[in-house]
Amino acid sequence: MARVLSGIQPTGDLHLGNYLGAVRHWAQDQHEADAYFCVVDLHALTVPREPGELRAKTAETALALIAAGLDPAVCTLFVQSQVPEHTQLSWLLECVASMGELRRMTQFKDKAKDSDSARVGLFTYPVLQAADILLYDADRVPVGDEQRQHIELCRDLAIRFNNRYGEVFVVPEATVPKVGARVMDLQEPTNKMSKSSESPRGVILVLDEPEVIERKIKRAVTDPTSQIRFDPEHKPGVSNLLQILAASIGGDPVALADDFTDYASLKAATSDAVIELLRPVRERYLELATDPKGAEDLLTAGAEKAQSVAAATLARAEDAIGLYRPSRQNAASQA
Ligand code: AQP
Image (cartoon, rainbow, N blue to C red):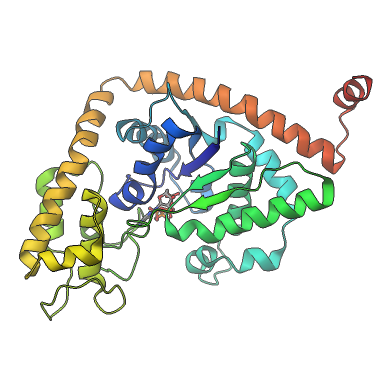
């Protein structure tokens, strides 16, 4: 059975982009693969965070994932920092990664903005992400479009390590959905919808109430010509609405454009579709939130299961790279 791994940062509230680009597919993947999903709290430390808020958002994100369909009885759901092997393997991989390849990462360039005060963790973040993936021998990594470059780096590191030290890692592939892989901000449709957006009106949260979703979509930026066609370069706002509608109902954004003659009807159809898509997630979240202890126990069990896999991979990497582990190495030579 193929192994799948992906993660999400607890840097804010789950939004429609996270859901359409990633989480919804994870809920399907768990039934078709041996699936591991984690809340990557260590990645959230690359920019300053208030400790209480980080802890709370980690728990809320896990709860939102369960509400969105991840079933801890079917997949392995855990919090990254509860499995210390992630940071241990990350160091080994940092020692095969180069400054040049990390400097080329567009997310680092966008977020660091050449500032000397950018944290070192922001620079090495993609290496920790590679460790997250390689620890679980993942064949596939289901992600949104902007993560492609990081998965490419992960592949490069795995191949380089294997070439230098022997076959230790499975080389994974990114799987990116055809529609909904880059949901854009409703107010600034040339930017991707993001948890840390400065325009909350441009971001639809998975837990937004129906009236809020309707209002945000009604006020979404379009353009002065009322022509409806899927053309992300020249009509980013309208194309984004068509993409959201298509991803929500399982259609094709180019074909859907022919169904509408004005922006008002496109917006009404999009908001109806998104409200119906997210309604069950919101209802389930409100139910789950009444018993946060339940989720805590599920995450502890998830971390234990994840660690048993992660520890075996880390041991393979440590042995291959030449770290001193006499008890393990003696046992292996006697076997
Ligand atoms: N706008 C998006 N459209 C489609 N997919 C998206 N993803 C994120 N934004 C979009 C996908 O969601 C998964 C988890 O995201 P993440 O939290 O690890 O990634 P992120 O890029 O850091 O998300 P944000 O919301 O943009 O957070 P901030 O603002 O903190 O940087 C990933 O598979 C991602 O591709």
